[in-house]
Length: 350
Image (tube, rainbow, N blue to C red; front, side, top):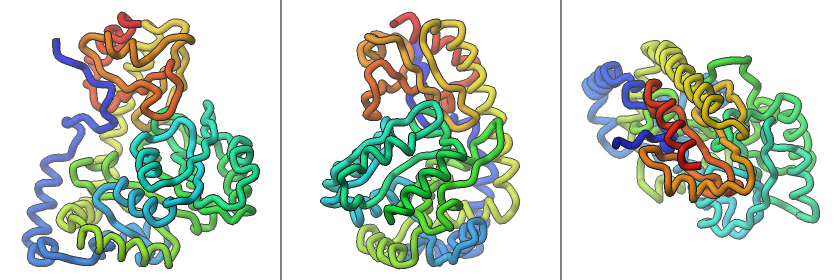
């Protein structure tokens, strides 16, 4: 029996624009191969930094390109989190949480509900704290819950954190992967572009390119660029040049539309399968992104269920610091015609 995976938060291979990326790679190598195959600036490929600066209306000097978004977060954690207190959503992205622990941070948590992280819980978490280094949030199509922070909560959160003079670190790799509803302003916009904004092209082009970016305040951008240089000398300039070429030639928007249409089909297939096979459980219908957070009736133990499930894989809630009765289901990787079979197999193990 072949395993159907709902564990991988990645686009299915058939969603990758292989031929277009191959042509972009050929083009940039012919045009500037001697440059992009050599060492370069630790902050990354200048034309892509300039393009992202145009997108967000910031100086390109504030843009740091890294080998995937997670490496940018690692650099930031090593700079700001070591020995300090920070705030995370609960539950939260597992790899980010591990990075913060490895950096020696003390972590406070604020609960995520169906409408994203609750600003009231953030205030409660910070009671008695003189100074916290930053708050880490994934406001749109959150990993692992798939929830989106409402516009009212976004404004409230930014206003509260501004009064505390506390840095916001916004991780936003999913907001362009939207199937329904209207886009919401980023926390970055509500902060007057003074907060930290992180994203990557892993969800919108291809994860194997490993191109992430972080927009930082000027001084912090310079410091992290120097740290990047000391860590790996230069990021993968070839991949960054391929991404830049892909965008400049007008391929980004139509590819994103194609991918979103296919992901919507997968999401709808999973929602229909959950309705059919998981009576008594609850979940939030996401308007985009990759994930559905399945909440089973207590006292279900997701770890035990997944251990005995045959032919299907997913990730238990505790991996994301979440409740034991929850399972993160990624609909992005499995083929649409596999999804109901996978959900049926999972239900058989409950």
